[in-house]
Image (cartoon, rainbow, N blue to C red; front, top):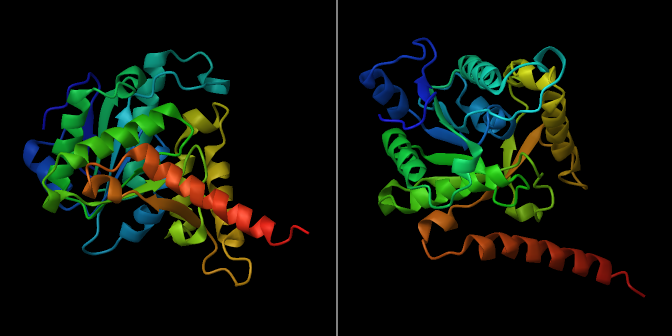
Length: 288
């Protein structure tokens, strides 16, 4: 597998960051659940549900793809004086540590700068994603939802959509958009893809706790992600007891890759319009 960017590579837990082509092919081929995230730790924030569902399960394996290089991260404390290259290096190490903790089949680092990711005509990135997806043949791909408020997250999701649209129809997996820089609790309940994130709480804590460059650096993503999952579970159903103690929400974006003429803007604003209609209906019934 040829990756174009300096710093790109593939890490396989138990083997390391210099696997041969046969080991790469074997690790990717057993992948059933593939998450493609923009930054180091995005995978662990948005896809703990499938990570836990694959953890120690026969016949299911999780793999991750991190698209950007970790440059430009906010930093404070012991990391305040780190150069951009030092931050890129430490974040790559942390991502591989997370892959080992989560027992991923493989962790791919594409190491693209954000400016390259934000180019909608980035043909090289699309081709890299296509090659990985074809090699993995996952049942489901998880990525950022296109209502996310982070430009790089949305750009990654759009590249994933473009890549999958170019695959033969029989090779196009289910595509789920997950929450990171915007929660999906605003979706109407019937449109939420619910992921149980209550399993193995020690693993969940360890996966996010490994990102010390972010936590000590001033961003408590570990507490924020855990709090969101707890809130999702409690506030999901007002007239029923909780099905689980922790959950994350996704949106099924499969129509965007099964029909290449579906407009992403119209697709996501359709859900916004549905939410608007639900609010209008609920408030309207009590208007005197």
